Each structure stands twice: as structure tokens, then as C-alpha cells.
Image (cartoon, rainbow, N blue to C red):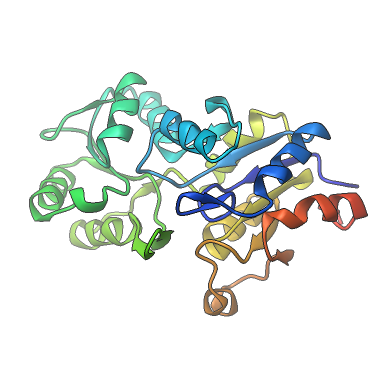
Length: 264
């Protein structure tokens, strides 16, 4: 049987830098016109969902905020589920403000939670040392994501993972990971569509975070050769994607030809 729903990564799959991947806009239109439910699961932790939606609109996509799932919103659910309302938030002001609107205030000292996302140039020794002291003092370390790198406008960029790993090493703790490859992150996205994992396809550019995480959660993974795809990463990965395509532009053809059968 053909897929009943899709989870799609954003950066590197729909667009690279500030430009849409050729054919990506037509592919999303094809899914919408043929009544395929879809959601976007991004490990982006520099931008709020509203900022992401506006950025996509400027590139020609029509993606509502409700269709975008990010680690920051998973962290809000995680912390509020534990009765928390504050955290030391190490990420951009845009994401920190969104979390504040959702009920998690930024508190730099004496907090029960330390949230680490991709803060980019905001990371420095005092910021990381303050996080270290909070964690040593008993705060729980929460990683919005643990990606090693991503593709920026001028090349590969460090993501949050290296900084999370440094704090884990220094404090002797393990972070609770909110974004991909967390199974809970995929399940929350599927629940919004009432979709079964075995009938859902995940499309991403990271063989371990996107594809490995999705397949561990029971989804069917398709790896694209755009974005941060690297052949050497594929060859050294502990898994083989169900399918590898050049870009998301190939999806309509694969669906029309019946080549995608997740339950087989």
C-alpha cells in the first residue's frame, strides 16, 4: 500500500540557505492536491515557528505554523509536564521568546532546567560556564537537539550537539533530547495527523538523525542528497536508508509510479 502521511525535514530538504530546493514547492503542492497529510519536523533551534513560517512564505511555500514541529515546543511540553515554569535557555532570543509565550520563562540562575539549542554566536565561555554551574547544582540538562552540524549559506556550521556533548562531559550527566532522533518527537508529529508510523514516510538529509531516528520509531525513511548530505556519512552510518533520492522533487514521480510501499 502507498504511504498515508509524510514527515518532512525543512533545512536541507525544502530549502538550502535562503533558496528553495528546485521542485520542492511543486512537491508540497502535489501532496496537498492529492490529499496526503504532511507535517514538518525540524531540529532548527535558532528560529521560532512563526519566523520559520514567514521565511518559508518568502520562498514561495504556504506552510502554517500548526504544521511545524520544533524541539523548543517539545521542551515546553516536557518541562510543564514536570510542573516547571522556568529554565536557563541557551538559544536565540527568537526561540527564547516563543518559549516564554508558551509558559517557560528564562531564568539564568538557580533553575531546575537548562535548555541548550543552537545559540550560534551567542555561545561563549561565561554562558556555557553558567550552564555548567546550574547543572552541577542539580538542574536537568535538556538538549533541543544533538545534531553535529548543518548547512549554512557559506558552508557547514556547528549545531547544538557539540556544546551539549561538552556539558555532558563536564557534568557527567546525559541530556534529555527533545528533537530528532527522539521517538517522542516523531510520535507527537504523527499524532497531529492520526497517522500510523508504519504507513508514514520521513524525508530528511541526515542519515542518522532524520532517517535513523524515524526508522527506529517505525517509520519509512527516505534520504535526500541535498542539504548537509555527505557520502562518507552515509557509508559510515549504522543503517541503510530504505530509499535514497536526489531531492524531494522526485517524490511525486515515486508516488505516481507506486514505488513507495512503506508496509513492505
